[in-house]
Image (cartoon, rainbow, N blue to C red; front, side):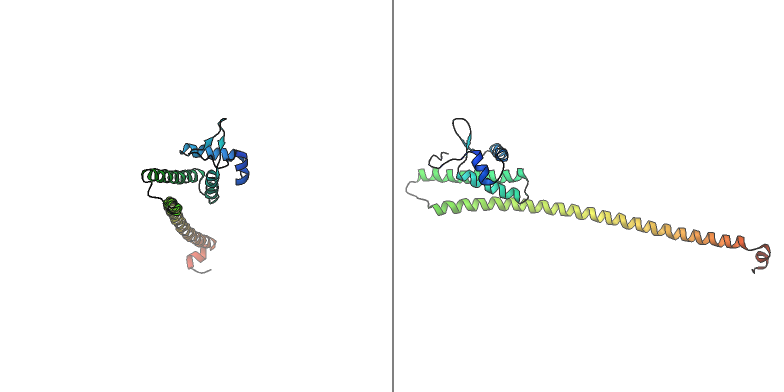
Length: 189
């Protein structure tokens, strides 16, 4: 996809715009390329970033700041932009086949926005499901802990009762030992 009529930027300029380090930008670009995203390169094989690439990086940064894992955010953004690119390619093929059918820019944007919305909803639903599963695990662990604590408390109470009974028994035995021979015999002190 050639964007020759747009002005391209190098990594340092884009990193400044995004307020991130150039090394972070390179890491993100490599990860996106692994997911199938393609950046244009110059004769020296340096990546050239265009406005659409910069917009994508802003979206990626937002997702990461919203506490999404870096890997999930990169996959979501790469898929989003691949879907958008495929939609644009599909529309260009349709345009070539049907010159007499002109698509309005708004229609294309609406189609792209709907695809983006579907992708985000799917990711959001997956995230909700993962959170529910984690909450269920936490609840289960808390119930187990509470059950064990209650069992421990019951055992302690039983031990205290036994100790109290044994202490009372010991006190009676000592009291009997203190009584003299005649008191034991006649039952008075």
